[in-house]
Length: 117
Image 1 (cartoon, rainbow, N blue to C red):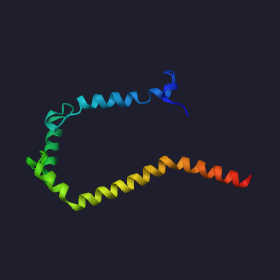
Image 2 (cartoon, one colour):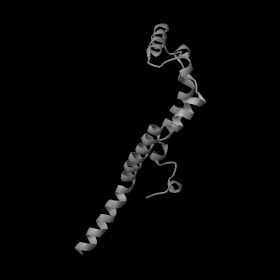
Image 3 (tube, rainbow, N blue to C red):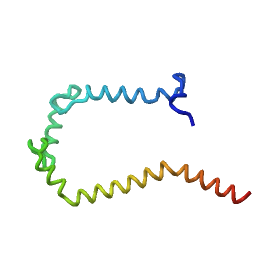
Image 4 (tube, rainbow, N blue to C red):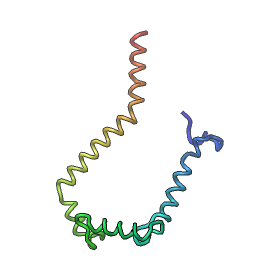
């Protein structure tokens, strides 16, 4: 395996992240925050988006703002903690499997090679 320090600028793999970074920065400036400020939508499309947003269940003017009381209620809710614990467990298992599987296979390969010899 090569380290980042040993890769030269002529390595084509060192350039793969540049388009993603540039696109992310451009999106920050070009993507609108709401339908009213979306320069790329026609007036009809803006009206349609506003109507669709208003028809969503639970959509109110206050629901778009952050409230400390809602945060306090969420912190005290046991269902949120159980969901977070379940998510952490499944993510840790999946990433652990994908990260350490090559090492496990390499260890099994050496184990079997030693027992055959």
